[in-house]
Length: 135
Image (cartoon, rainbow, N blue to C red):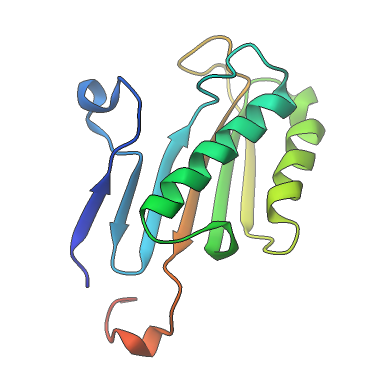
């Protein structure tokens, strides 16, 4: 199944910008940069938790979960927030330990946001179940 599937989220900007919350191609799921919508004024730990909660919902709709995440990217607006954000990330990924990147950026779309997170995951299953999908 190399057919592309788009999964919508709740962002009012999806149609304006032209993006999907997640895209699945074969066994691969890519989740777009996800801000802390609904927790805009929380501290960085609360915002990180909200981002990851929204990502969990996107992964579920695409047929996977945190246990199958292979990569995350965290964009922080303040380098001093790295440890608080990292601890929340660690709470979600303690056992999985995906490849992870943390970058400090000048700002995000909503100036109240302290973090935005992306994730890539695989659909569970043996690669031999679907020859050629990982190519």
